[in-house]
Image 1 (cartoon, rainbow, N blue to C red):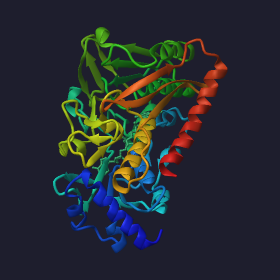
Image 2 (image 1 turned 60 degrees about the vertical axis):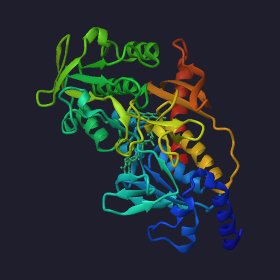
Image 3 (image 1 turned 90 degrees about the horizontal axis):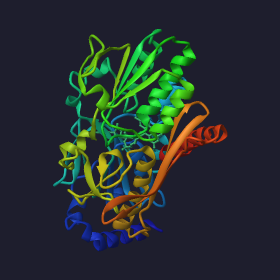
Image 4 (image 1 turned 120 degrees about the horizontal axis):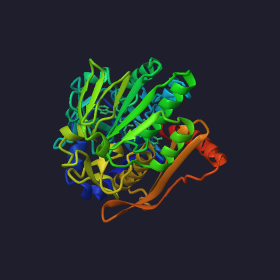
Length: 433
Ligand SMILES: Cc1cc2nc3c(=O)[nH]c(=O)nc-3n(C[C@H](O)[C@H](O)[C@H](O)COP(=O)(O)OP(=O)(O)OC[C@H]3O[C@@H](n4cnc5c(N)ncnc54)[C@H](O)[C@@H]3O)c2cc1C
């Protein structure tokens, strides 16, 4: 298509799509960042967050044509995947293999802006960066991931996380946790505080305990123990994890539900203690995985409800609070959404399709997605669960869930461990490739 024909088609589509928002044309006339004249004629889609959800969305928005002006705003130059970071803790994967850059997306036509967004100015339909830059949008995709309810674990704070890491968002925290794990001495106690629902990657705290036990065993640390203080009565694939802990790490991992420990009363990062109703643990390492909410930006922009997450219409991932904004990934809520990289990637592709339909009249297929989640108990021993999902009455509904079984063969478990490695390669290529 010639440039002129494309511009004519685009304006026709914008006219046709003015149902999306009556002020769309006015927005297109708003001051823009320095950009070529042709780019300004294209509908502007801004994506905030270059993680599993945001980077996928940006990529699929430019895939299939350059009719959209797509800007990806990310505060870091690299993304460190939280997924498979537990294998890094275990010494089974080098840190460098968790790190991804944005060059491929840029090569595909995504415009990068590296900086922290401090505000979404919803009425003006633009976002404001820390350095004052304003980036206008016609549609916004928000994928900021999670934040924490910092005050909910008594004694724990952002500062305390430098001694008692969460390591739940990749980056420096996961390296800190790995350094601390390497320093656990003979007889040392590790305490993991596991979060209430809903939270990012439900099986991951228990995979983490497995991988920590594996690392201690591999290093020959004698008599070390891992105590999981849970805020829930049960956790995903519990019989499978407990069976694996008995087989691989006999006596090393103890799980306590609130009925046993009676509640977490305080953590003391200086003394490295965790006090429950039952006892005080003097620990060599404390991993606090706190209660979670949507990334701060979603909350500051008034896009969250009482759950702390951003409610969306599952058939379009459109915010129920602002119809110009799509929220995807862990920050979104609306039915049975799993909070995983797998799901964020699926949601992003559906959202890109919906936006290309809204702005360009591209073909719309029914929104559907799947989620599969592998958890490594030991090398060559991985379990998995998953389901497919579809929107019904605006909410996402889980269909056909499945889970690994206790009596599976060692061959099947080994096969699943290899599947997990293959999934990671495929997924990160899909997001960043
Ligand atoms: C230990 C662990 C293991 C896991 N294992 C798996 C697994 O096996 N399979 C799986 O599918 N999932 C797994 N997950 C979950 C997965 O990591 C998340 O669900 C996924 O990353 C969510 O994607 P997202 O886009 O919502 O957020 P993220 O991937 O966290 O991306 C958010 C991005 O937004 C950026 N950002 C936030 N605020 C701003 C701002 N104001 N300005 C600019 N940029 C901003 C951040 O820097 C970040 O890059 C695991 C998680 C953990 C912690």
